[in-house]
Image (cartoon, rainbow, N blue to C red; front, side, top):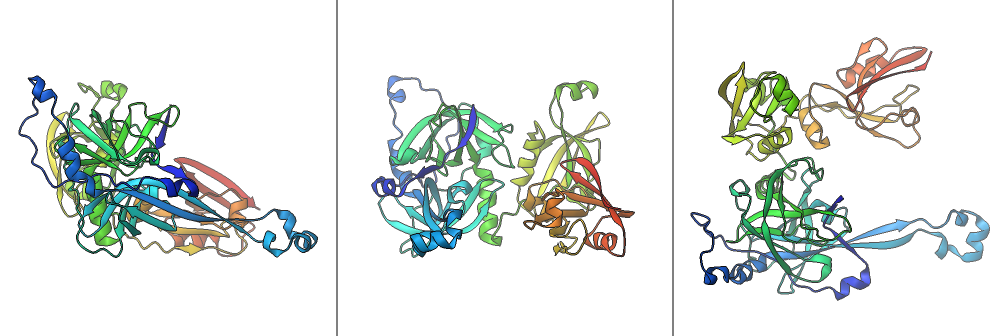
Length: 476
């Protein structure tokens, strides 16, 4: 069984034949006070048609094109073949890669949310509404960590209908939902189902793993489409399925609307996704760990490290604390804690329910964006030394967030390697943390430069790679 995203790739001939129908949007609707089981045949026969009819103007099809240049055969490097076949066959050739997805208008001025994997590195993006109007779209910002992208439609006239974001935290397993998208390019398609599960954190699709699972049928082409409740609230963006053959098997996953709201708001404000930073790391309470800690059940996160001067440290969080809840909502595991913090507004607060020394207590955390200090000091190293050709930087919380890794303490990270450089040939990799060179402990780029300077016969290098310490000797 494989997890597949829902982007549909297409050739140029098929694009012209695609249905140009749009998808789904809805004016805000009040949530029913209570969920009620149907009690009569008339209630069972109720239809979702009015909801879909009001919603459809705000859901769109997203078409992308990317021009790829392919180098001709190496044989054309030979002057004989170039002379024989002509220069027109020798140069690079262009190939157009096209794909199809879905999107949702979330602002009347033409702001569209879709999946990052739908737009990818597209050179052209065309958005088609359900009334067949076409608009060029530009990428405002992308967030690969959540697989979301924000588009802005160009050259609008009148305001467009938009679908308001609901509160995905209000969902319950068993709630009826509708999935809207353009599967396989056949045109607008509406499917129904229920919320099968919430807070699915073991699905390795994005860095923030707390997905809504539904059995509403979704297929390739549904990526970026809407998941709405039966009263028309947008509560998720469809993004992936479990599938044996690429089609729907009744297990689909959607990004919760609360994460969507965080990404849209920050990208429109700052041009990039900015999420709240806790400044603490730990591990999920497993059954074995719960037993060793005499806990009644395996739930929560055991804090192992708290970064100095972080929101967690200022709020009083300590190593050994067990985080049981955030703002009254239970925390099941580490991924859910990370998701909960990431969807809270920067500048706000969070109340953490803890167990400390077998006693229950609560602390208040003031949330902030990850700071960009110490300064990154990105540096390309050169010369006759092991890191020649490597681009390195001081790791700080903001850079760690961009790279999708936990920030523990200051250090120097390898960002890039040039092609056939000394560093590349020695086997260094982007993401390696440089711990030491010879007798110098490396905590900053300045430390590294001092360790590499001077006249030495060889270098003893210590790295951290994916949590493992590696040592090697160069020269000497």
